[in-house]
Image (cartoon, rainbow, N blue to C red; front, top):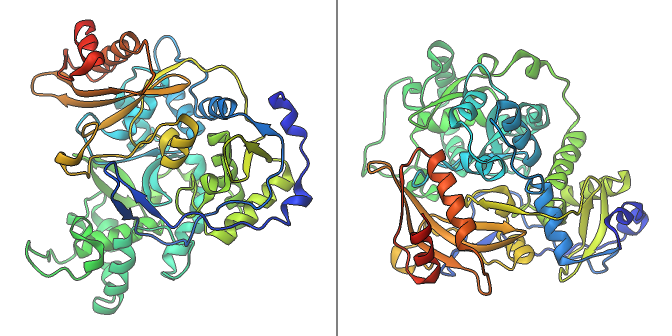
Length: 474
């Protein structure tokens, strides 16, 4: 059945009677199969409906819809990529995840390159962290991210939830270090947060270390006052305080210095028009955020849309159920059945099924592959990030990028920038079983990436047939 016919499905009355069962407990496995649990609030994810309704969508159509929704159906533009095009990519996907790993380049640059090709990275910096700002930095679920300014009013309710410090509220979206750290600071150092805010007010933009009102720092080897955070997130008190102020919306990220956050008062960072914009009700904001997630995914299960773990925009289970029902009743979501999927799926009313002829290397943090279970289902591609896996247990390399060709993920490419020798290193490349005719398009994409990263050479040391073919082509 043609995709257009899905838009006439009327199943709102049926939706109300569904019983949604929990299917996700927030446990993820890495490349070697070990399990790790995310810190955070929100309870269990959404799961499988007992009775599925709606027209049937083939797995191939679902994959094309998903790729088109993520901007891979348009083809890369010719000519210079200006800030308008950069902004349109972020508006479309909704979010660029920010990550500190820099073995290839900072992750937030890569999704834009995957969709637009070569562009000026400094231009993305300008619209993110300067007076030409079109994006702002905040948390999307538990992920540090760059978001379009239009999303700011939609997240004010989450900022207020943090400001209330009701840490049992499942709507609170803040790093675990902030949650446990603020519980301790409110008892041990009353008034400390306001002292940190005063430092930002007087001296901002400043780093977390510069925001300390007394300069007191724990030394290496000192006992960890918040042991549940782990060593990586064992923040100094000033960092906890200023991150709380950031999560509460009282300060914002003005820029970055050597990738370290610079904090300043929100009213000195964001445009006045954004701060004056009418604020929707909490229910309106939730609906808009989940509806945007649906547009960015194209077709998705409830868990993928807004499940507490694995959702594009995570919400507590009961809230997510209600929001999805409201969007179905409004006609923004159309219930469908995707072949091979045991959960009820939903099609965005903006979804389009059309051929996809893409070529892209995908960051491990690209929104197309955020949800690893969804990636496995849509592409038959089991993928786990391996940067936290011990070297001896890595299967495909360290910083491994899936290679998208056409509408399939056809290979895994381990990449590293050797900046000292101006070389893009390819230590490992692994084709998917049955994938053919990969070498030439992958060589072309690696050549484009090397030029974009201002690297003069490409060195392929990967063995195997694909590795040998690449080394001859680049």
